Image (cartoon, rainbow, N blue to C red; front, side, top):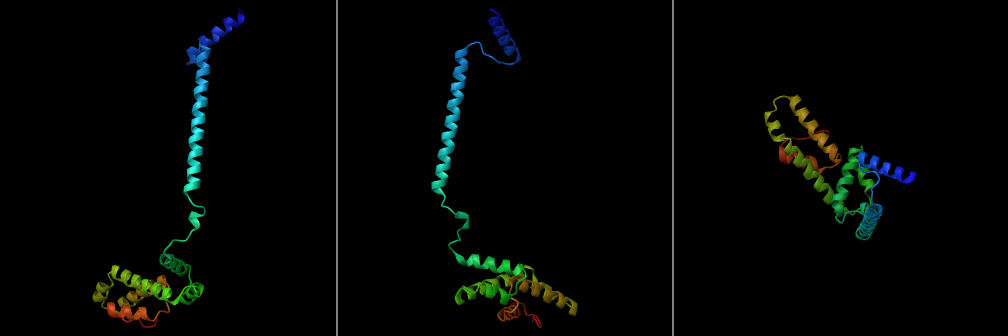
Length: 172
C-alpha cells in the first residue's frame, strides 16, 4: 500500500513538474520503442551516406593534378617567383618540362605582364610624364612587374614593352 501511495505521489509530482512519470506504463514502452526506431533509422541513413561517399569519391581526389597541366605550370612559376627565385632558378626547377611547354608558359607570362601594365594605365602615365624622375618611377613599375612574373632574364619582354608603350628599359 505504501508503494502505491509513493508511486501516485511521484506521478503527481511528475505531472506538476512537466510530465516525469506517465500514468500508463504502455505509453512509456511505446515511447522507448519509438526512440529506438528513430535511432536505428538515423544510423541507417548515416551508413548509407558514408557508403555513397566512399563509392562516389575516388581516393586521393585532392592530390590528383588537374588534367590541364598548363595552368599548373603557370601557378608553380608564379609561386616560385614570389618566393624570390629568379628566372634561371625557376627554369632549373622546371627542367622536366618540354621546350614547347616552356615557350608557351613564357608567352603567357609576357602577355600577362603587358596586360597588367596596360591595366595600370601605363600609356597615359608615359604621356603625362615630364621629368626624368617620372620616367624612373615608370621604369621601376615595369621592373617590378617583370620581377613579379619571374622574367628578369627574358630578352623578348623588354622589346615587347618598348614596342607597345614606346619606352625603353635600359639596365633592367
